Image (tube, rainbow, N blue to C red; front, side):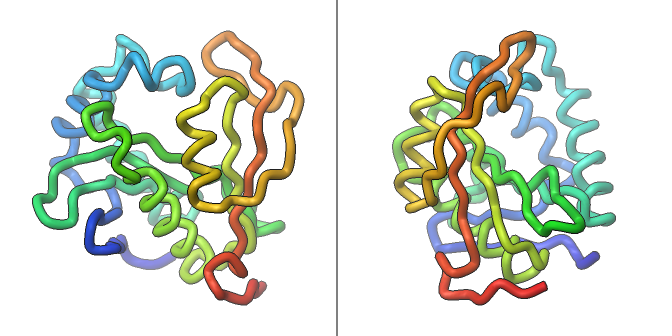
Length: 188
């Protein structure tokens, strides 16, 4: 598709995961398990350094074929690892995707997830030629819902039985971002 990219707003940088991120990724997930595990199936006690290593390799392969774009979130000045975000479930015909984010516990409440969501949504519309980014949030995940609200994502309602986390089935809030939210025109 196109080369690995990075974007910054001067406070954070989002960039493709790189080989060498594994230890920082693993440490951030382990630190954040109590907050992540209720909402993300992959965030559990069995998440190892090898799991992180495999994740980085897989995300780079997916980036190369345009099926998923995963980004590390880092401090723009210190390069400290802050979390992850990405565009997944990219529909090749209808040109929409799922937009997700998480921030390590020690950096909650600083607006990082919202900044990251805006940066990668803009990437979705300017570079990946998508026309819609969906933010699907399990009912009960108030922190993630607040992020979607703060970035002025369009609230579209609750979808019944929309997602699973482990063995639990959740209704989900549906939010969306569109190219027009960034002063862009959707193009096919």
